[in-house]
Image 1 (tube, rainbow over the protein chains, first blue to last red):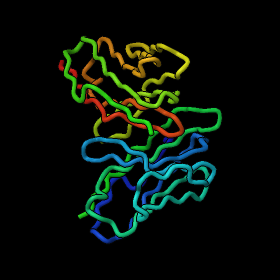
Image 2 (cartoon, rainbow over the protein chains, first blue to last red):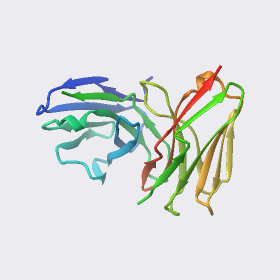
Image 3 (cartoon, rainbow over the protein chains, first blue to last red):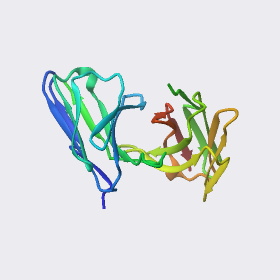
Length: 114
Length: 109
């Protein structure tokens, strides 16, 4: 029973392309997140979605856009990919109401832009 | 915003020894402090957490302590085993989660 799943696990693409990463959670959590982990392993939050509303949007280029069709899914769309976008992207889910509560991470998507 | 500092960045211990990782945070309103373990090629896995109304929490070989006054918290792993080798992250939560830079722990058999 996978709690937080992401697809694909690996993504290799060329500069300028548009790509999407999918995320699903079956934990019944009300909030989902996207994190970026750079080559130095630093984890930085990009977005969080609560009840289909964006509640955190760090200094992320507008080429990145989260899309949440329902509470169990938060997909990440990236337009006009750049070399600097190469990183590992993690989806996570957690609860906010009555919180703070723990966040659970997916296995990650390694994005390589050539 | 919150700033979380984590030390050391690398830690090597002999199997059976203890390992201690320390973190400090800047936002006194932070009220939840989880620790994550990340193995190679995997996502961070929550291993233990502590809330601001508690000073210490233990789960088998792992313990976490929190000093709210000094704004620092620590992870203690006793009787380390080679499978404890991984990157460990601390985090502090106040409306959003801020992570430390990570500690690469190596346990030598």
